[in-house]
Length: 196
Image (cartoon, rainbow, N blue to C red; front, side):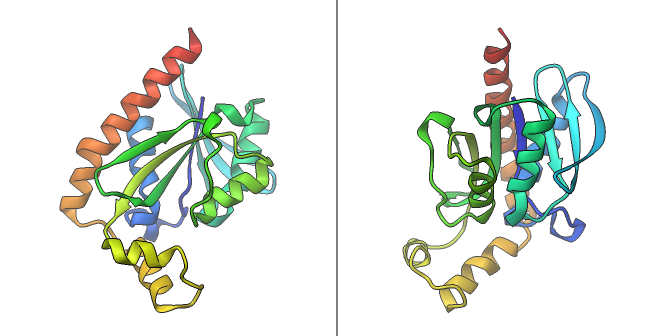
């Protein structure tokens, strides 16, 4: 199983909502036994690969919207299929403190997420696993409007602003103490089943 986050690689972005996947990746990295990190260059991109006994973690050094290039390079490097990928990303439609695993067979959509769109374009398929981390903090009416909001509109800017805001310390505790631990447990259980 290959776990890859949709996230921006810049240091100043690490703790914002759009980079919620980093919280899970850090937790996984600390729990994978025998992990060895190495730097790779593929498809014109640099990325970190952490290979452990049960999981391979890929930490792309790309922008969020270009995640697909790193996913494609990682799949080639690991000689894997798209179905072995777990793409971790934030989701505005899930409340903070919630997470959702969507199996490859479900062939989920984009839902306005450019990192997911990039991955579908790069792999040429929707058949990869997704682990969505809830970052929703907008009220329901704004959620409904954002689906139809043209780029550059006030609603669009409010969504972008919300995604780029850093988590408060309370929100960080919600992520690290509940979401990240439960999601990590789920991925380890899946990985154990796959290696049997």
